[in-house]
Image 1: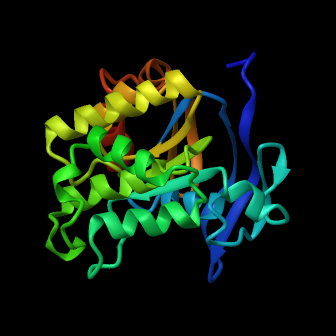
Image 2: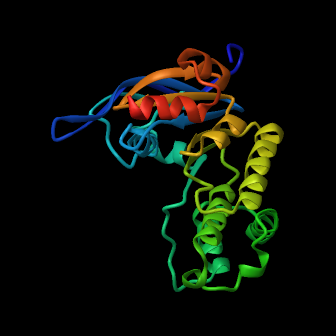
Image 3: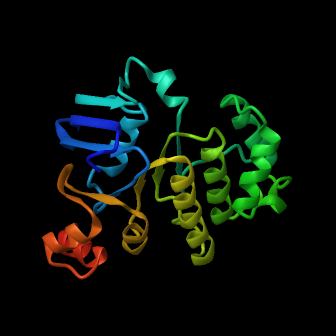
Length: 243
């Protein structure tokens, strides 16, 4: 990663709630064209970290720079070039999939929204759902709609929180393959949080392992396994979670 450009730089990031540090003095980078996995037990601070990177939560201390710019003072410029998806996102239930995507495409100022929506809904195999109200979709279908929404603006950085949690194995595998293809073709950078350790081992160039708000290890999946003496990331995860 030495010759690659860091698009995200985090230094000394801390977030406290009522005196308790949910995120405790963490520093890391997300490089151009890499998938960085964010792993750790529940309560490790992963979601809070993502919220701060999206400027949804104000850090107690520390610095976040994206595209070389300080986040808090360049919010609009930065957030116009990133996007986010999660299995827990809620969309307007009374609107159809097409209506939702058209609204977000307008908000993102997508140049040719019809063409972009057609391209992405085909890739995620949801073209048959375009005229279906969101309230009638399964959780897995909503997840695919949210991933479509997150790619509408062709972001430079994509933040993903449990993006395949509701998907069946076939669609989850296709989703990972598509994300890796977009990364290779367009240099997309992805910060990817998941509890699926097999998935993280498959998709991540590097991983950050968090526990109790701190980074306890970072590096390639093979390096993390070697550090903790585990045959897989899942084995490492269980060792950390049960200690």
